[in-house]
Length: 208
Image (cartoon, rainbow, N blue to C red):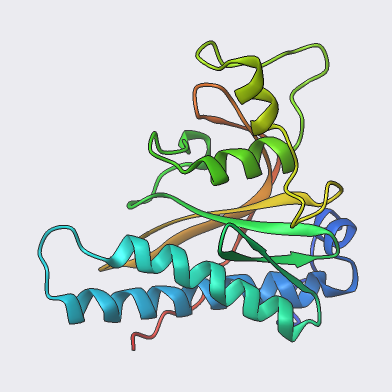
């Protein structure tokens, strides 16, 4: 399979519309940066020497964010800090990486974890695509104040910045299995409705 940016294929029209002239390089860089993040998390796992409560998942999440931010800098695009975490923002589109499973699983089965941080929920609610017209997805257990806060855009990103989800599955032994990016609306039951998604190739994953 040809990787985007490798000369074998061109980025999709969807990617070009969002990332402009950087679409080709970004589509090629995302799989590479995820592979590098896995290598870093794998090394941390080995160093810890723990059979349970491995630091792999936490390290991977941090490393992916940081490496995508590095890509934004290389492309001379923005890096915004939200609640202490760096997010790559390319052409007013913020990349939101999320490991939705530790084994191969269809994107349609992706679900936000029940202990996901308020920051993640708010990013998805405020900067993700809106629900279908006429549908009001107020969570039953939320007050009006809490609902409004979840839908309040982060000043650090800017109200006009839209979210592009980078969803993937990975585990410490096999590495990254699959990568998707696109636009997803977070539903009240923590599932996702995808307005658009496409699969990216998985890059070779040499371990550190």
